[in-house]
Amino acid sequence: MKLFLIGNRPNVLQRWSEILQESQPQVLPVSELTAGRVSKGDMVIIHLSSIAPSSYNDIFRFKAENPSVLLIVATDVPEENEGLKALQAGANAYINAFITQSLFFEVLKTIKNGDIWAGPELLQKLLKMLLTNSQPESEPLALEIENDLFKDLSAREKDVLSVLVTGVSNKEIARSLDITERTVKAHLSSIFQKTGAVDRISLILMANKS
Image 1 (cartoon, one colour):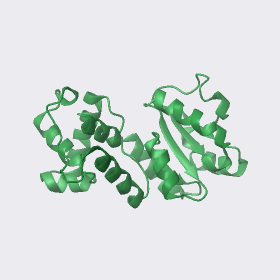
Image 2 (cartoon, helix red, strand yellow):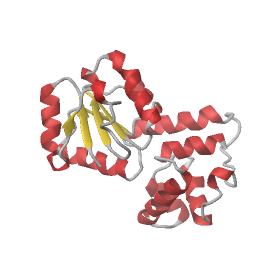
Image 3 (tube, helix red, strand yellow):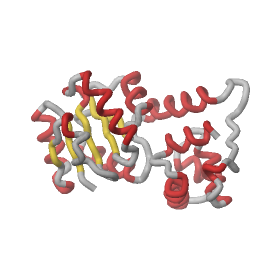
């Protein structure tokens, strides 16, 4: 996996490069994002605050066409509406550009495991929006687990998925099914592989379309 940094503020890019030096990050101009340098499974961190608004569509179009590329959107002053738009457009994480080193590492670990990173309130709001938008308010979410998308899942994986689509955390899934978080992560990894989903948001979208 290669790590690319995109932005037009040298001090921010330098700070990220120092924090993430073990991953040997490469600074990449927006214009080269679609030039073939970024491949399947690579990670891109974008400093949204220093990118021209005219480039936003190109960035998220690239992500839509390359879902396996991990995209982290960083901004100087995180805003809920902007964060929601970024996550809905496919970003795997939405963070403060001046995030601490330890938290930065946690973000990378989280999205590599197939999860989405954002503030808990923002993430919860996104999940609720996804669930609400696809189901009448008077009806609970009903996952048609036998849909072809999920035909290869084991019975336990279907159990995990049925709880996940309610928008809860791994810890809450583990508590609900009386299993460990480690087991939940193992099941999710298998579910991602079998369904082709790249993260839990993708799974929820798949479930809501079933």
